[in-house]
Length: 245
Image (cartoon, rainbow, N blue to C red):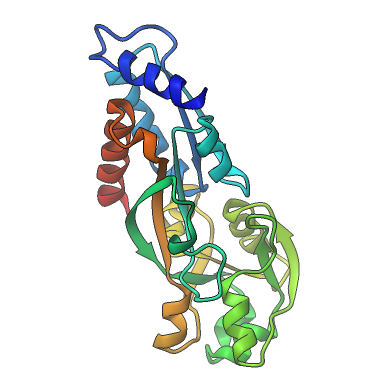
C-alpha cells in the first residue's frame, strides 16, 4: 500500500499551477540542524507548491521504519563512524538510499565563564567536569563513550536530555559546571539564539577523532529515488546545506 501511495504522489507532482491541494511534505530530521535552515526551506517549498503542507518530526529510533512505511518522505540526520557503532551507513537497510551532505566533528561547549577554561585543555580537564548527554535512538551513550572505553576512561553523565538544543541551553545556564558535546554546526544555532558558549575541540588524537566523525546524511526509500517531489526536496536541502553549513 505504501508503494502505491508513493506512486500516486509521483503522478501528482506537477508544476505549481497544476499541483492539487493537499500535497504533503513529511520530514524526519535532527534538530537543531533542520531548524537552522527550515525558514529558507519552507519558503522554497511554498514558492514551488503553494498549497503544500509540511510536517517535520524529530529524528528518532523508529524514523527509518517510518521512511520504509511511507510515513516520511525524507530523513536528515547524523550517522556514526565508529567501527562498533550500530549507526554506520553500511548498516542501513537495503531499501534505504542515502546521500552524505557534509561531515562534522563534535566539539565541547562550555559557558563563557566555565572554570575549565582557566585550566589546560586536555583529557583530564574534559573528564573532570559533569557532562550533559542526549538520548539518541534510545541510548544515552554514543561513539564518544566507546572511544573513552578503549582508553580505559569514562565520563560522568550527570544529565541526559532529548536533544542538542536542550543540552546547549543547559550548558549556557549559570551556577553549574556542566559541559555539553554537540556538532560543530551548532555554532550557527548558538549565534542565532545568542547563547554564551565557547567551543573547545575534543581532546583526542587524529585517529580517535576519525572514529567520532559524523556524516550528516539524507535518507529516503529506494521507491522514491525518482519521485520528482523527493528529488527536488533533496536538491533544495543540499543547496541550503552548502550555503549555511
